[in-house]
Image (cartoon, rainbow, N blue to C red; front, side, top):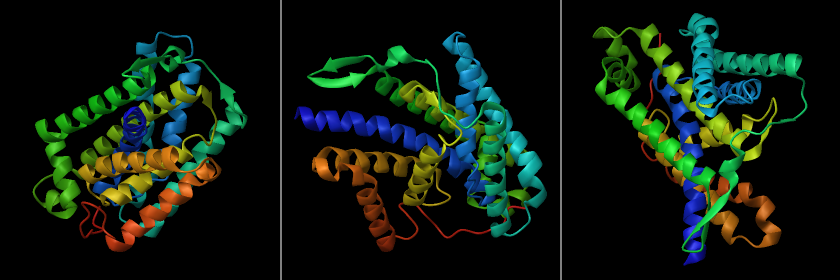
Length: 294
């Protein structure tokens, strides 16, 4: 029973971070049909923002990093994606790769390619026990932060005019524009929310690992992409569900595989994902997608 409870705790922690990454990606995909590979660099920039603010009180670090990454995301949309919004999906995809490489190499130019260490939220790694289950404060903070961010996103989407417009645009962008939804504003809000979610992931990662590097956003972004596909491209609920599902699958394999096979956990996880997509290509909540986003 203790082993099962420990697996549940670990799955909730890992799944929470996956859900945050997946939701940030799904918000942008929902309105633009854009798989934004530069989302990894938003996570990375949040980590370097934390490095710059090292030593400041943590509330100031959190507020400044979230605001900084959200502004970068909005600027990214305005400078890079808005001019090519009416182009083909291939053009948007290439643009996202270009933005990703530009931001990564810009950081390398100013900060170097080496891994840097910092102490942010070190005390959160201290463990405590509940019924013989080892839980770190970071696990608790990760779950609480995820629930808070999901609650904030849900409140924006359901209780504000812009949020309702964003949901309408996610369902049918062309029809939403025909009834008066302002495309530029809705897409900018989606990018800002995506940036805030990416910043949250970066803060949690920095607290967990204590390091920053130019490529650190790649793995969480990849996990977010996979979770989005599992949940169904274009579905916000599906992205969150896919994130938690991927977390459960990964942790279960880590806990159950023999020691010699543990390094191949990702291979087993992706084999399960491929098998699932063969049976259900559109994901858990997927639907047929259109390409209108102009």
